[in-house]
Length: 466
Image (cartoon, rainbow, N blue to C red; front, side, top):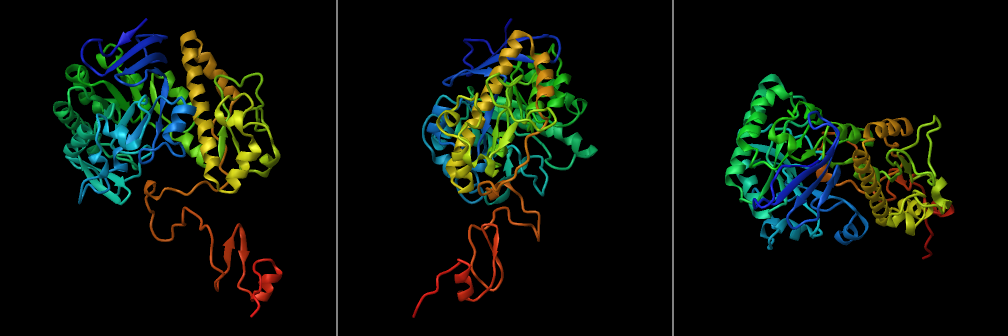
């Protein structure tokens, strides 16, 4: 059984085929294939790696090509336009048929997805206007007009572009605000579709508000724009069951910008019919020093599993505790990624303790591999018709949330966080301090203000002779 959102031979750059689903007339899991001209095919459900300033954190392009199986990359425009107010952002001067790929040095086989904002996005102090949204660049907040966004898409030529959406990050919108959101988003989408290059692939945003409050906007897509829109980008996956199965847009690929925080949330969204995901928690786990260990629907019989003591298995292993410092077992004994086949836990734990970036590189390679295997098993489950039963087994086998962070991760990228005001603690600890008049914290201990002779006795200094 197959369904397509774009017919071959039409000159379009994208083709989405639904190869298998449980019920064509109801929301449910579906197995598909997304083909983009010039890129490798993506079997769905699958995920796009989240980037920071065009880079998958801790991974170089050659490492991505050799040691990962990610479906594509999510790139945020706000990462590149900090000079847009008083000059031309450097990325706009990049040559080639795909300037975004050239500037970021992404592997040519990987599809690129351009969105106006990161995921997760930092809440802006000022709201959106009728013509622009507020974005958070490395030099602070600034406005991005829809006209400018269209020109950036024209110059950067991403494989997929998400249209501008009137999304209020943070507080829930009021009644008056909700009334404006659908109208603004519809106007911005129509403008993009009328001015874009013919071959540009555009995903229409589905807003995080009640279906009825944006029904006019979505009906307009289904009735008038279905041939021009190539996919849907959901800011709230709970709206999936409300999309009528009889309309043309029900056959379009669906992208989740809903920021699932655990594998269970991913499974729930897939059960509603989601196809492509952005998964921020994989980066959070890597930065926290956590090696993911979950499998779908259960751990392999040869694997060594970690229980929480109450029967449920942990979704990952915290690599900071000293118990790993003498362990010569892999992060996961059943994993065949580069990290697990080439290194052991003691080495990774040593790298983290020494604040060596290679530690997070190895964790990131492993964690992306685990997530790729997770989605591959889900696709196989959908094809076999056992997805619902497998989900129940996964929920009874594993904990619902990832382990808590116990160690200090790599330095926080400041442009990803908004300052909360006076008295806010620093997000990065000082690497070293001076032996001044106040007590200084060094490697977890206090260095007191004492004479050199006493410091010498305690091993902090060596007294110099005249």
